[in-house]
Image (cartoon, rainbow, N blue to C red; front, side, top):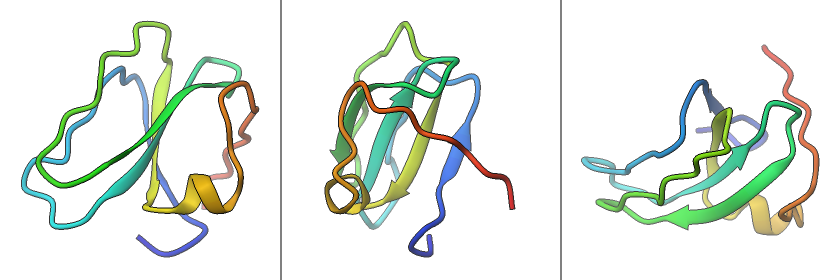
Length: 80
């Protein structure tokens, strides 16, 4: 995935990296775009279930740290 881009999965409350060869950052968002939880998943891992999530944003590994995104932040998505 190119820097500055991500994959929005909706509805979604859990993701996995089975069969993937690289790590990804994962941010679970509520219906208003507020970050409920975040993590970095290495290959062959499964995220926890986030019951309150409206969807999940998958990003290149390191993106959440580089942008200092934290739980409680609001993310606005732009379709390209």
